[in-house]
Length: 116
Image (cartoon, rainbow, N blue to C red; front, side, top):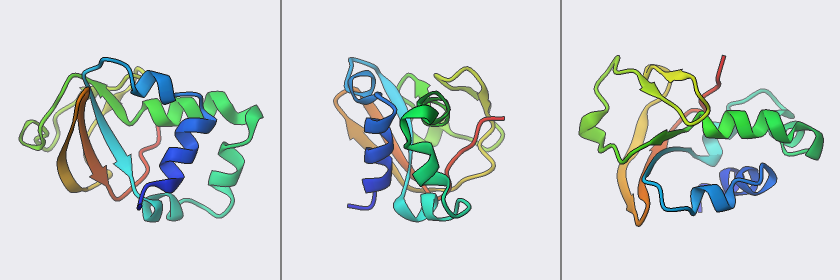
């Protein structure tokens, strides 16, 4: 699959149970190539146990409460992430929209979103 890095990161951050809970959630899921665009060594560093809080913050920045279809994601629309910051929707492109799940929806994105 094209999301092995994301799956490993979710496991390292201890977020598996959270993301498998009832929801609903909208998840912006970066591909392996998206993680590959980060500076060399970034992912290896983030999955270390001592960086769990930072990794969790980055991953929860990709999650919005509620089930939002791609048609709901208009340019410039501000979304509040589970992490607490606003997602502005202008740093990443949805490459595969509306992958429906039992507890929400996944939109595959081409860039890892970074909280400020």
